Length: 125
Image (cartoon, rainbow, N blue to C red):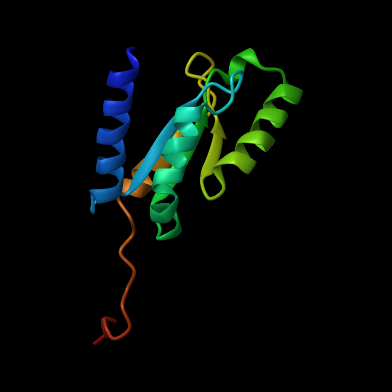
């Protein structure tokens, strides 16, 4: 992709992520064999203030099936340091690793439980 197109896309995404008030969460896909890219770091810097305000972040370390257990643990440790504030999950569509957990988490984000407010209790007759 030409650099000018990449920069324009970055700006569009940054504006969306910063200004979209009803945005509940962001899911970032990352190949752990390559680590977070410069663009990933820029995205995280852009949304960090929103994460601190409660925006959800999920970083899926994709292609987990291509890593052994030691490499998975190392990738999780590195990503945890880089993302500070988000949830991390190992993910493999091929082996179905993390698929169900991710689906459940996204459902929870989209359907937050309504907490009872004090004074809203229903009295039994």
